[in-house]
Length: 162
Image (cartoon, rainbow, N blue to C red; front, side):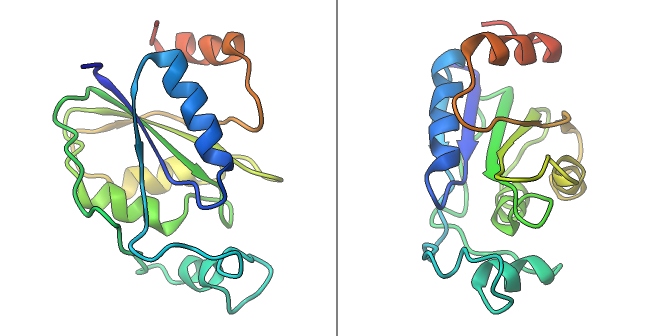
């Protein structure tokens, strides 16, 4: 079993493509973070102040439910954590995932997709809730098709070789 997991949340499918590409390059296991209540197209309309996306992101205490509240991370040393950028950070479901699972002793490496912004505060926001004895690396934006060469350079900068 590989000791690397690529876990991702992808309500529109874009982050899923990136996560699958990354997992293939890393020869890593792949895990989809699914909400207990799937998001609709209307839920994802960030421009509507009454959409689920907007309501979740303005509420600091919001933690959307997970289809699988706990994930067995015991066989992994490194977890790549992927998501779309919402409101300049990770979606609240990523914080739910971070709080509900045991990341002690692991390295967490965020990656994200975005149509118009960078990683924002996502790495720091994840670090605040993920627990003690966890190394959270600075994340990277991986939009569209990313060449294996670019990903390998990023992995090399993190000290990961595959």
